[in-house]
Length: 207
DNA sequence: AAGCTTTGCAACCGCGGGTCC
DNA sequence: TGGACCCGCGGTTGCAAAGCT
Image (cartoon, rainbow, N blue to C red; front, top):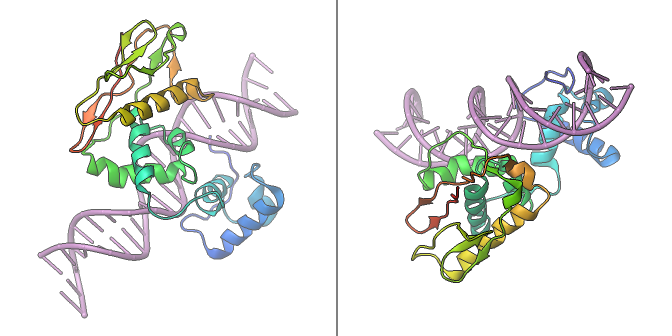
C-alpha cells in the first residue's frame, strides 16, 4: 500500500514548488495531502508534500544548529524512549522528527560511540504504573520500592530531578501508550545504561 | 588543481494503524 | 466486515558540499 496519489517527480524541491505548496497550505490548511497534486497540479505525491511541509516549509520548523540545551534533551530523551523520533521531537519545540533523527545519526551516535540497534518495545503491567520520585540519596523509587536507577558520582541532584521530571512527564502524558507498550508482563526494561566521558545515562530495569 | 573520500541532511520507501464507506 | 484511502513513523538512500591527499 502506498497511498498519496500518483504524482511522480522525485528529488529536491524547487522554490516554485515550495511556493505552490505553501500557498495551498495557507489557503486550505494541512491534511488531505493527496488532494494537493490534483488541486495544484504539483507533480509530487501527497506524501512528499506532507514531508516537505512538515520538515521544511512549516513556520514552526526551527532551522540551524541544535543548541546545547536541545542536544542535552535529545540525549536524555533518546535514552528514555529509544528511536522514537517523533516523540523526542515533540518535546523539542521547533524540531522535527527528521531533524532529530538526522542529528542523532550523524552527530550524537558518533560522539557517544553508540552503534545502531533494533528498537525494543517496553512492557509494563498497567497495575504497576510507576511514580518516579527522587529520594535525595541518588536512587529513585517506583511503586513498591523497586529500584529504578542509581546515581553516579558525576551526576548532580539537578540531573536526578530532571530525570525524574522527564520520566514522570512521559509516564503521565497522553502519549505514554505510544511510547511504551502495556502487556501482562511485569518486565520493565527501558534502556540499557551507558556512559560517556562526561555523563552517565540511566537505565531502568526491574522485574 | 584534480580526484577521491567523507559528511550532513533532504527526501524516499515500506509499513502499520486509523478512519470512512 | 473488509477494502480503500489517509496519515505518520522509522529506516534508508542519494546527492551536494566539505575535507583530504
